[in-house]
Length: 623
View 1 (cartoon, rainbow, N blue to C red):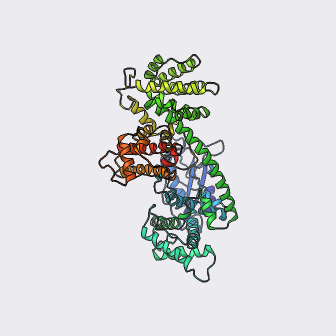
View 2 (cartoon, one colour):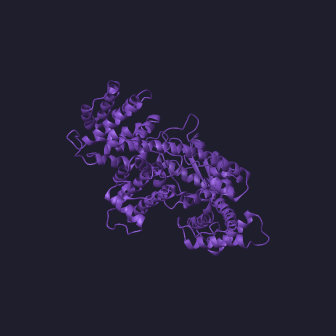
View 3 (spheres, rainbow, N blue to C red):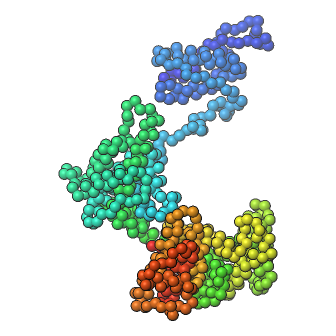
């Protein structure tokens, strides 16, 4: 058909001429064909059942072009017997001001904006790679279902199900799901333990429960004749799909394409959610593994997967060590800034001095935390603080540069402010340069920061009446705890809630310094604020867990507690300790901030009384 159309266009066609009074040949009209070279360019775009034909005509007006187009339509449909069955659907006319290049009026097909690849990128992978990738995606998905507290952006199961509608993943994921369900059922059967269906995830719980039942049955009562996991998985999934009318990969007679796509996607999602929840249930004993490759390696004996699992485990161990160091550095920086604002006297304790020494060893986090604290406090309070506590001669140049840049950020336009932020960081780098006396320089910055924070509620702060700006020391520490990871520029390898983990480490370090620091800092935790009715019970349970863990430490050390063990313990903290040790009723009606603050102080005081303050991280860190 395309060759016939091309031949017909190249042969030309007859079309009536419209002559105006200005035409030189008006007295002698020419009934011949269109003028020579009237066709400047043409393009034929074939499609199933027809073609789109583009023709560029030279110098014709709208009326003449309309007649030419009509003549072309008639010419094409009568050119050859093969074209008789076709008829024009639509005619469009538009003006072209200039050619695409020296030789063509129409752009080449390769430059056409509608050009699309013939295959989805994933379809270019070999089948074995697609299969392994599908298994990896499923293993990654079920790991997210083992963590009911994971935020939405970490729910890989949802991402996998939503993306399965893109070729080739629907077929590959459903096939891999069948294989993994069979292997997980065998693993669970051999381990001799079963758990209830996981709550996390979407889809129908009834569908998930039925698929879980069928998978477990395949392990306890395997059908004779089938020994290959792929065939067993295929049969399992196919029978489940037929039973529940989830035939997502079937075409229904007389069903419009749009309806087929909508039905198929909906049924595929239902199948995958049921499969993921069933698989996560049977594989729950593997939740301690640190990556999806290790989960897959437990189920099978694939050499490639085993190699990847070993590499994953080694890399995760290395990443975990780096994360732990970064967390400790960031937490130490935050605790130092919080202490200098809320309890400056505690910086002179042995624990406070240890934090200063830790910041001196790795001052990157301290640099960023002190930068943000002074930035939010403002140049006015900082200038007043420096007037009361002048910088040593060695630091004066850097301090003055920092203050000038800070003032610029408060009044300059965007471009100038960006340069000023760079100047602030450069000034801090000079102040915190490694070398002799770094610990003293850190202590000076802390002293100035604490004084600056206290001056935010005085006339030295011109912005204290502006909504959102820091106007009290408590507001400054509140802002610092809202997003501590951002203020410390903390980025972890682990896919976890960095702010929540860092706040827990900050609290445990404060507990090592002093019980009162733990209590006061715990009262400021952002987790205690919000309208969600679940927040208060969760916070209360977590706080009681601190005391229980601390009492367990004391019990393991063979020590009995009494009020004389810690005379500085507040009345609220002592009330909780007494109630927990005696099994008495806990106080009722306390605001959650008061309860959590007392619990944190109580747990820290128990650790200090038993000489186990160094175990605060184990007590306060969530498992």
